[in-house]
Length: 155
Image (cartoon, rainbow, N blue to C red):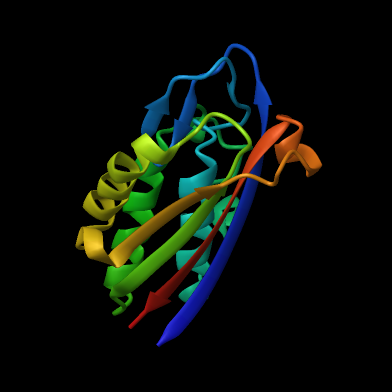
């Protein structure tokens, strides 16, 4: 068994779509980044890569490489999952938390869970996605950005 943890954060800015777990979320701002800036998927990728001792998202998909400009993060997750499976591991489960003061994400969580499980080719029951606020504290509480944590177990 191998356990991995991932963390990511992106700044909220006007003029970008907000994409979390491959789901477009209606909001006045989106996340700034080289790719689609899907903070949740990036945290999951880092958890998977960490568990498999394969580095991190920045090493595998550097933001200095133009082929990853505006990349769909679910496509990047698919690449990572294939590497994980090719190396002999299977994903046992993924647990994740999105930290955002706004927008409210409850209604989107089943869609996000489905997107992640489909991309990773695992059952929905192996993926958990939660959302929380920081009670108006810190950069997420001030609506400056969104963060995400993820842990995974590989077997």
